[in-house]
Image (cartoon, rainbow, N blue to C red; front, side, top):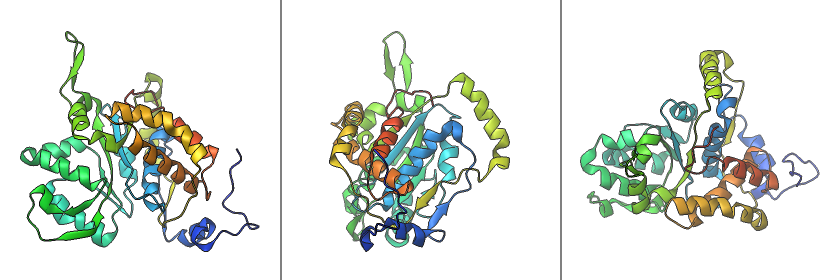
Amino acid sequence: MNSKPLINKKTKLPKSQNIEEEFRNTLPANSVTLGVSNLLEVEPLIDIIKLTLQTAYIKGVNTPVNLLLIAKPESAKTSAMEIFKIKGTYTTNNITQAVVVSKILPMIENQGLKYLIIPDFLNAIEKDYTTRQGFLNLMKSLIEEGITSLDTFNIRTNKVYEPPLKVGLITGITTESFYGHYNVKEHHWEGGVKHIWKAMGLLSRFVPFSYKYELSKTFRVFEFIEKEEQQKATLKPKIVRRRVEVKGNPQLFAKLETVSRDIGYEAGGYGFRMQRSLQALAKANAVLNGRAEVTQEDIDKIIFLGNWMNFQFNPL
């Protein structure tokens, strides 16, 4: 299917849907042009983060798309996330219930915070073991239905948030921390957070993105690291920070059902949340490619990224 170009002088969209105007008005003042190195070797990783962030600015996407990166240490999870230290995001590993209440909620309410980026989620929650469960329950609500009152989490306050405060989450965890260790004798994994998060309904709120490097690629990654400072600004992904409307397509969205079901089953659900998230990511891809509606190209992009939207650790 041919993509409909954004710039088409013969076609005038209604003002509320005129993404041509949205782009013209947002560049450069309201657009984010990132000085990003040439990350071709981890391009799918960069793409999934970029698309996730873009979903925050699409009309009709009312539930945040949350992203969980899973890979071995030194797999560029943190480096990729730190590229996106941009307006509308807050990056930290210092996260507790107290920080959420005193800093994150006011940033959502008063500064329009869209995404919380926590490079090492497990390391962050290990800092406050005594309130870990309460913190996870707080985060579970914050990244989906939103927070209306903190009394629910045994935090005494008279404040009521209307509409509920919510924020998207992009975070990472190592393979071992996620799965624990493999018991060769018993043939199963022990420890790790996967089964705990699955049981409490947290895992199903994330789009998982797991990956590994083939040996041949590790050499190229080393080369990239060595040349990083010289290659800055060779790739400049843009996030459009103005809410835009993108027309969906039920027939095209149906092609994402298999991916949604597979992820949902693995995470302990049916895939309904995942279907909404994947549709939002498809719309984000349309925006970043200058289109006012979802096309087959956007579906193909999400299906391609679906190679890593699982717990199988396929090579990048």
